[in-house]
Length: 230
Image 1 (tube, one colour):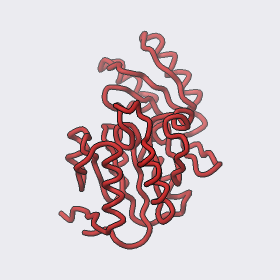
Image 2 (tube, rainbow, N blue to C red):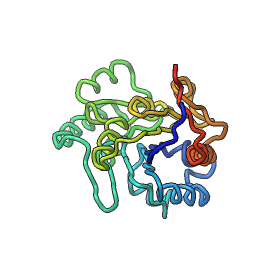
Image 3 (cartoon, rainbow, N blue to C red):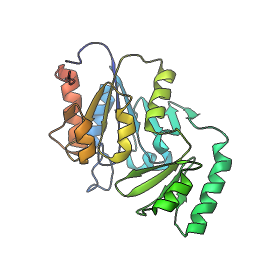
């Protein structure tokens, strides 16, 4: 089925989807220009586990329709910042960080979520944490989130904010993009995506990272993007 009519909303992961690891995760000027051209006619949101302060460095000058950051817990549209998490989370987060300290696990805290880099929890530790929060992995790293909050809930909230009811196209590469794929109309994997993302995708792009995004936007603009019908 071709996706040809009306405005679309592209929701894209950032690391290893929009920006190359070999480039230090700085988005290329070509990709910036292409996205800015695209948002003149459609919507493009960047959905990432990263913090806004880092996006302002790695993607300096890029102005998508919206940013859905810290794995869906914070949404930025223009000058507006929207918290997509219960206020009670911040008290729960204190308990989470206390448990991590007792486990001897190094972590850092964003505006909302807790990051654990390159550390696998034991089954017991993970079970204990999931009593009070959600834990999502992305290529070995972990993000600790409020219960029920993730990239999917962030996208749903963003669509409410934009009052958008058209087709949504999600593109990603890693494990924490699986939730995102559950709430989009067309699932797209960049060429360097992990197997589990490629398995659920309607389309696996030929190119990796930013080049894959350019390929996707070309398909959308040419009316050649299709969705599985089975």
